[in-house]
Amino acid sequence: LLFLLLLLTCISRTRSGDEPPLDKGRVPWLGHALNFQRDAAKFLAEMKKKHGDIFTVCAAGHYITVLLDPNSYDAVLYDSDSLGYCGQKTLQMVFGLNLTNHNRAEEKRWMGQCFHGAKLESLSRSMYRNLQVLLGSAEMVHNLNEWKEDQLFNFCYSLLFKAGYLTLFGTEHNSSDRELATIYKEFRTFDGLIAKLARSALKSGEKRVANSVRKRLWDLLSPPMQSEIGAACSWQEDYRQYLEDSGVDKETQRRAMLLQLWITQCNAGPAAFWLLGFLLTHPQAMQAVQREMDSLQQQAPASELPYLDSQGSTPVFDSVLSETLRLTAAVLISREVKQDVMLNLADGRSFRLRRSDRVCLFPHLSPQMDPCIHQEPEKFKFDRFLNKDGTKKNDFFKGKSRLKYFTMPWGAGTNVCIGRDFATSTIKQFVFIVLTCFDVELSDPNSSMPPPNTVRCGFGMLQPKGDLNIRYKRKALL
Ligand code: HEM
Image (cartoon, rainbow, N blue to C red):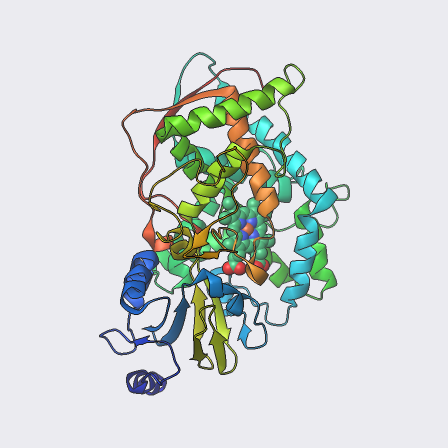
């Protein structure tokens, strides 16, 4: 009966004069759900062509207004009175986590402090040490003179996941090579199912796998027994204590650890993959980055790798990272409309949003892939974010107006990535160690970058459909 009522509401909905263009699709209730899920970027680009910068689509019974004018994004990002968080249902479906009574704003503040100032510096240094240890391990360098074959995505993801896990979750009890390999394997299985989990689109066999892998990860992430006095303190333990102090029950604490593992580990590995992949397939970019890294190495004391933080002066690398993220970061920022509200756009138009609809921003399409902002947006240009004099470029325009948001890989407003400085220094350190200490090349010099797996579009960093075969050999002692 409820479904019939929903169906009726969907069929009968019409656009009123002050609302955005409405596109219900051909199939009642289902609307555009399948195209949206299959390839959000392609679907939204088609809708933008048809309707312009703002439109409302129906998808599986939901009405979603999509805004694609970056000059108007602040109207959504900073209206917390009428637009609210709508992630609770996803948290429940994906992580089995109910945090309805939890103060999210307070938790964000707590998280912000962890990845800022002296704490950030200490985590970044710990990450650097862990990366050096993992990249210098016997597994990586067991035979100095021979090339080792690998696939670039697995190479980047496994190393950054393991180093990130050791840095944030590691204690003396859970950090052996075998445990790291186990947790990485389970995590990748879970991560591979996450888009389907969030959309309730798992087949029955996949559902079983998802449930059991989630349970194993909850167990693996459970803190050591309290009786084990002397267990080294980790960021995870601080977070558990924070939840305990906020009155969160033990089972919810266990489940929240998997959410944090995913948030902190799911983006850096894929970002490093795209970045190294673009360098390996664009020799001019590789030479420019290598020149910059060589000069940093020369300034450091002999036989020492310099520690690089996110603020260190590496304009070429920074431009390469921005360009990589412009092409491959694809978060969908989503809000629930709590009450009818007028949305005022930068060009002077206003549109009414209806209560209990959703409103979404998709920065991947605009500003990041917008040809009016970035020329030949589909091309990787390593110096896109550099001025002619080699300094960082911040001036980008749409028409005559200078843009506040010309690329948004880290989100913005209350949806901004809290770990962005940590992520930047991590990726910089990783690329620096790999390029300084290893010869890395494509197994087939003619290979090109694999396309993205479009099903993950909207979930943060894209992942490739396929991989790049590489070979590497150690060139200097770490
Ligand atoms: C949130 C991007 C790496 C910690 C976010 C959001 C984006 C993002 C777009 C907002 C998501 C939303 O609100 O819908 C990225 C990218 C990364 C990266 C592109 C790497 C290239 C990291 C790392 C950490 C981290 C390494 C920490 C170790 C967080 C946290 C949040 C967040 C704590 C807040 C989640 C919340 O709303 O509670 N990130 N991130 N991120 N990110 Fe990142």
